[in-house]
Length: 244
Ligand SMILES: Nc1ncnc2c1ncn2[C@@H]1O[C@H](COP(=O)(O)OP(=O)(O)OP(=O)(O)O)[C@@H](O)[C@H]1O
Ligand SMILES: [Mg+2]
Image (tube, rainbow, N blue to C red; front, side, top):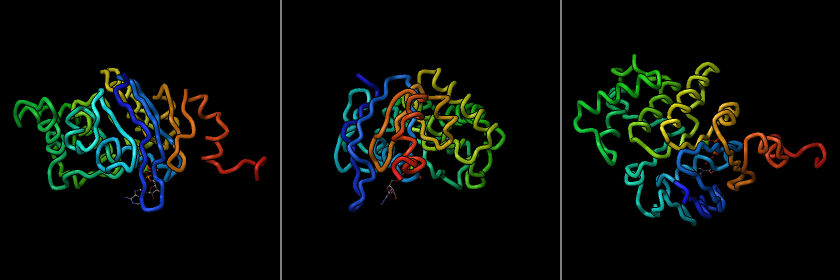
């Protein structure tokens, strides 16, 4: 039984089919990449899996348990964490407090506020935000907000993290650091769904890549095979000379 089992997941926004009958399985400890052009439905898929939007059709199970109608907080407590492409921290709280909150609300919470804050400091060090722990989250730059999203997700002690463009806006050196961090996270047994437009990062981290286009899964397989797939190349670049 896979850790995450998505079947026929579909989301309509009016007449737009944002996610179209997507099947997806992620095994415990696996790293799966999710790519696709802008508007392909990647973030919507994450919203459906994590309970932030109700699906129009289809089902999601996590560790064998159906997630329908559980709601986002309960799904997070089961150990399914997600980050936001557009970070939504508690802006007036410190960076440290933002990470302590999920540590206090997960399935096995930190034993005290003090313990949660100390754990937050360790997590912030691991993502390179240690020096900014005492700042209000509203003062962070965009790359730092992405680090904060990662630290908040880790504070849930998840079994699976859905990472929606945590590397967007990072310099190449920062991407390298983020990749090393995600490898460490994965080495602790946490499965990852990595959504990135930074293809070097997705391809380098994932053993399997899934491609969405207009809400549909158009390809799935090892990174090298997927990037050579004519349907994937066409989705990114438009129809080739042969079909123009
Ligand atoms: N709440 C919403 N209401 C209406 N349409 C939406 C909503 N959310 C997303 N969409 C539309 O659904 C489609 C998929 O959007 P989504 O954000 O999932 O794409 P994406 O693959 O994450 O794109 P990007 O790479 O730009 O982040 C787009 O056409 C988008 O405009
Ligand atoms: Mg998106």
